[in-house]
Image 1 (spheres, rainbow, N blue to C red):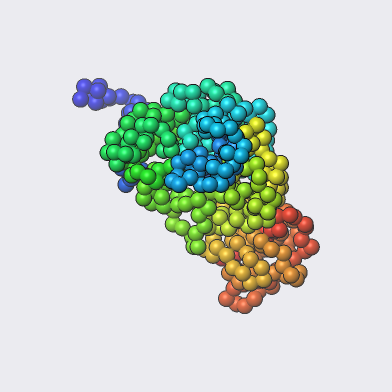
Image 2 (cartoon, rainbow, N blue to C red; image 1 turned 60 degrees about the vertical axis):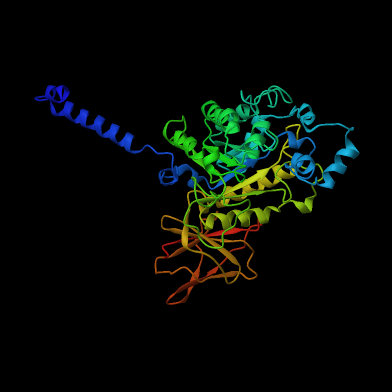
Length: 462
């Protein structure tokens, strides 16, 4: 009251300043999120994420050393019952009796890891964000976690901060940086105790998971937290809503961070910032919520495999078609590569990433910052996927038309409609199909591209 009385007779400028401060404080208070899904799910997704469209996923850890089967090597060898005989045979044929999985960590040298080289490849791919595995289900952290003593990349193996080194290189190229983190750990003693107790106790969560997560966020300021390993227990066990409320209210990245939907059994496709739903999720119609498709260049694994074959890798044309389909349905595309334990991105993976970048250098205007159109696809002459931006609709052809024309039935044209091939400024000739809509476009000689996809821009259509 005394403060209000002292303002009587003050200048309008002072009164306005006080009013602005009060409004700002009220707005700040009103914007805080409470630790429940109703509040957390109402948080608007930071705009950078939807605009980005393409990210690179990196699965790298101790599992890269055996490089066999998949990143689930330890579980298939010694976790599941009965063990997968394929993994048992691999170990008996290649390693001495009594060899333990943690011994692989000493062979995780990363001696050729050059974060600038990696970041250059990611930049060349056209990706706008990068998500590195900070910790997979094996529990090994690629940074010096104070809660993972002697089972991290600084205490053993590479003896360097892999998370921090890549963060600097990626951000120096104006890319957003995110971290994958598994909530559970297959063989952590505290987790096994909680699991045995039916998750009625939270020793693992309180002593290991949450302190590590808070430390990771404050230290590295990731703009994506890609959570995983949630499915064995409910979100109440993981204390997910309490962590997310802190993340959105008080963390160093509260205004820019995005999260996925893997925060507890039953949360997928229901709660979180954007939805993954499941690995390699591909919806059949336009979702009502922002989503992301994660997929891997190696169709059989997320981590590095020594014995991968060419026919087990996604061809560039298939990657581009998958990217285009995902963006047409309003999603982001997170494309995974698995580096070697030496720290190299296999040349075939690099070739795929650079190929994506070459295509986006020409056609990126139809992808970045685009929005789903009223129609997502059609298949008259060839498969066509639609995106939109402002007054322009993009028709992306994912196969070469058999003739010099292509028919598009969805667009509704007018006398001022213009059509162009993205990358070629010359307007193209077209004719209406019928008064209700549709057009036939006369195509120029389409340039060769290993991506096997071309984009038409249509201005002033409905």
